[in-house]
Length: 201
Image (cartoon, rainbow, N blue to C red; front, side, top):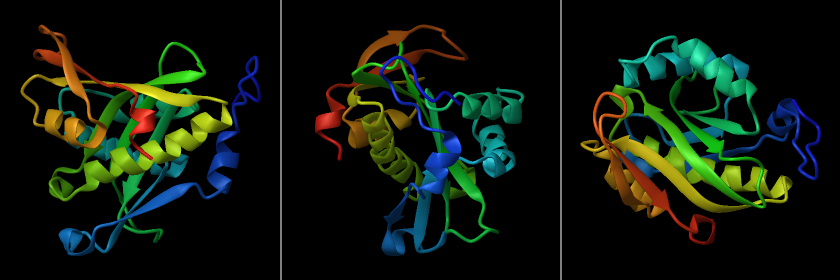
């Protein structure tokens, strides 16, 4: 991991983990089948195998899930990955993850891409994705502050027919800016949440 980059301070990944940087997102009875709370925290090496299973289940057309996540994890702090677990017990499993990417360099006003969001099929519809977005974004803003940066905009692409559009609109205030024909397996929409650093704490 880098210790400095021009005037940007890039903390050691292990140091960030040692600070216990995670968030608890309480739901009450809405997550009664999953437990009382979801823990959102920075991904660790030990989470990779379980996170790869989430990736495989969520993105069936993609391959080499473990290698994909390993590469992203090693690119911290440009790539910041957070996992969702049902509690802090060692036996609790990863039920989802989110990948945030700093675009086009370490900027004073950072533009992030929500590159990937995945939740196990059996845990979908329970608020885990919402928790991942909102709680991890709060932690990302802390990370940006350590780099003397503030959050400006968030970009996200998703299939034009994906219900996730509504999730991004409700949680981030993202709006569709354009449609890209036949980008991956179908048409994709580009959504942008502008000045999101002022609206999400």
